[in-house]
Amino acid sequence: MKFPKEFLWGGATAANQVEGQHDKDGRAMSIAEMIPYTKLKDRTKIGGIMTSLTKEKLLESVENKEGLSYPKRLGINFYENYKEDIKLFSEAGLDVYRMSISWGRIYPNGDESKPNEKGLEFYRNVIKECKKYGMKVMVTLHHFDTPYTIGAKYGGWYNRDVIDMFLKYAKTLFENFGKEVDYWLPFNEINITSFFALFGGAVFMEDVKDTKDPKQVNYQSLHHQFVAQAKVIELAKKMVPNTPMGCMVANMTTYPIDCKPETMMSWLQSEQMKKYFFYDVVAKGEYPTYSKVFFEKNNIELKITEDDRKLLKNNTVDFISYSYYSTSAHIPEDSNGSKTGGNLVEAGKNPYLKATEWGWQIDPIGIRYTLNDMWDRYHKPMFIAENGIGVDEKLNGKDTIEDDYRIKYLRDHFEQIGLAMEDGVEMIGYTMWTPIDLVSAGTSEMSKRYGLIYVDYDDDHKGTGKRYKKKSFDWFKNFKETGEL
Ligand code: BG6
Image (tube, rainbow, N blue to C red; front, side):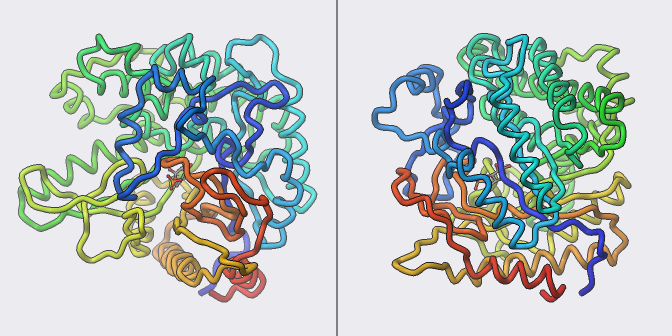
């Protein structure tokens, strides 16, 4: 299989999952580091963590670490180890490094009038290091890490004023890194706010408990993020006019569990609101008709101004990116079918697919299906921003991990991406999740490892922090050198 020379192969990470040193050099806590690690007996049941987090529990956690642990505060210490890590990324053959900038390192509480120079200096060094090896850089501005103060003092993304704070932050990044950054993504997995406004938008649900339905809060907060994204794109046109701006959505492709006409109708409606909606707003620039019907039926009244509508229409994304880990089955409410784990939300079990320990179903063909579907619908270049497999791995006295399952996972997905390109899908590139082990976003554990590089920390951050190349590291390196899968 031949991939075009200009296709970018790379890897992705997120600031709050790798950096650690969460309070160093003027940084303040972000919402991400307040999500505790909770040991789960059944690893597929992740949703419980998110819904059981009360404001009180979260606030307590800022001072009091008793009984709970917060691995995202420590990460893999990329903050101090970035030179070695980026060197390894380059050795593996990454053409592009997708990183995120922590808002809280630049504006620790969000509301300062001047940026934190120490934070800027850190990212200047990281970007410089990537460029030293000839790597391109893709930057995500917001990867689930709104500064804690924005949540506690301003009500998070439910408050429209947060848009301006975000714009100020974006302007600072364009001023400082506009010349070096090759691609920008304003939000990681923007759709997560529609499920969990706390995780996606730092909204403490107790603050909005008088609102008739959490969905109202989720979708209004999401609307503010849509507006913020469009404003950032508008600003980019002036400040970094030739740098492509993309969206990033947690892709949730489903297949109908059977072919009953009723199932098909319910599947279509679910695909509309759980998948297409997020892309439609940012790629077509308007709220689709089906979403208006959905909001009406659910008594959701969004505050959307005429200016917002114009802004969305005039500032759509240049390319479409999404994370792709798995697909699931759509099971209508009144039908039989079982559930399994998924990316932050439970998923319907597809009897034809195998799953990871966390219940995430493995479906390489689904990536080709999704690429075709998205390309036909939007005709914008595609970028796979995340894809990978989480596995509980242990060194057991050795100095490598024989991760043939990861090689198989990546190879199968790469093949299907190649086929999608033969189908005519226009693509920019792919960044795997992830070149290096890091703290899980959903469960805050270290044991769920995705990397080509093993990092010696356990869930309690015990270990040497030493980096070890897994078998997949060499496999990927060879693929980059020879083109052989
Ligand atoms: C995506 C996120 O949801 O999936 C990443 O953008 C995350 O931050 C990745 O790490 C895998 O999810 P998890 O919960 O296994 O870490």
